[in-house]
Structures are given as structure tokens and as C-alpha cells.
Length: 182
Image (cartoon, rainbow, N blue to C red; front, side):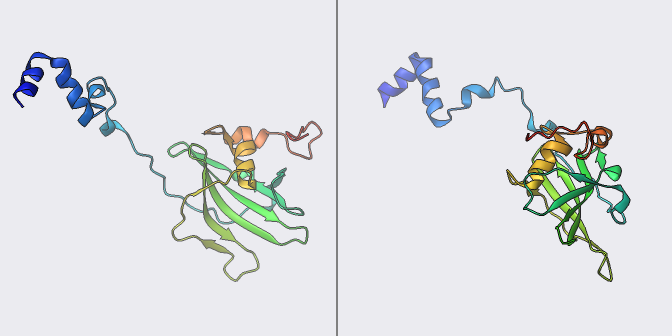
């Protein structure tokens, strides 16, 4: 024991090596300028569901990841991007070849690759609009139709696209439209 105390007293580098074993990150603590207390956590703003999708404003979007016979429509005219939380919100309609529809009001968060369903709409019900009580964020699965929608229409990497540029993007029925898959 006396030899250890003697070595630590006369060899300071040995003492610092002994503390590194206990805390391998101790040598970086004095160099770290990062202060977690200054982080502002992301907070989603309160979302107000629009009345219903505007059927006249629905635009068909090309989407290769939909099941065969299904088509995707979006109300891009009423697409909203709130700069306080950077979430793009819009009405989407997935329609089958026989005319069955699934209509949802959804939000997309490009920074995290997540989406949230805020409401469902079905004109055949007595109460057509059903707002989700506790909507939750879900991860957009890779190679899904939502992933393609986010990548090709709503997001530019991890940043949301400006709604005006989304509205102006060429549509599949436009003469100058070039599919990214051809």
C-alpha cells in the first residue's frame, strides 16, 4: 500500500491513468462546450383538423409503392406547413379501382421520418369526420407508399418542402412530367 501511495505521489500521470479506468470520459469533460440545458425540445403545435377534404382540389400523385389497383390523391391546395414545428399537414385519399376510399388528414415530420393520422373522413357515415382522440407519431416504413410520398413530394431530405413548390411540381398527367422511375 505504501508503494502505491509513493508511486501516485511521485508519478502524476499514473494517478490520471487510475481515474481514467473509473471514468474513461473524464479527460473529455473539460473540453466539452455542449450544454444540454440550452437545448430547446421540439414541441408540436396544436393541430386543428380542417373540415373535410376538398374533392375538387384532389390531385393524383404517382406512387409506385401502392398495391396494384390503388391510386393516391392529395389535397395539395390546402397543404399546410407550420414553421413553428415543421410539420406538413394535408388530406390524403387512397382509392381502389372499385371506388372504395380511405381518407385521412395526416402530418409528416421530415426531420424524424414520422407521420401522424389526425382524422379520418368517410362521406357515407352519419358523422363523416372522425378526429383521432390521441394521435401518435409513427415511423414511416421504408419502401412504403408513405415513404415515397414523403421523399418525392413533401420532404427534401430531412427538411419539409415549401408548400408552394409542392403545388407547382409537375403532376403525372402533365406533358412535361418525368417519372423518377423511368
